[in-house]
Image (cartoon, rainbow, N blue to C red; front, side, top):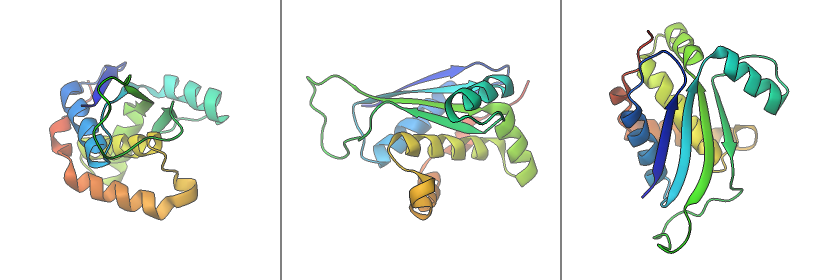
Length: 156
């Protein structure tokens, strides 16, 4: 079983349980079991600082991933005596996600789901700089398999 902790550092309403279910489903579909990760929702100021401090880009971005593991084992049952596999953190700028959804004419929950899937794939070793086509295809396939409509993201 995978454990997903969700932290909302914004004033927006986010169904944290639905987020955890969606991310856990993505991990299961990717053949990952016995893993832990954190999803954090932040605002523009915090995301800009993270992007500047970790990527050298002094601008807002929509999602950042901070992997702990270099290689993530997939498939098979995890060893119950082994410690959990710590994947890392996915950080989503909720205000940026809502702006992007509005600009693209998408439901906010779909945009947030897209960013969550994208961030999790980065934790699992996907890199759109190297395998953009494969990552985009996997992202699209996963979005069809998850209940993104359950996210119910609403600005306050």
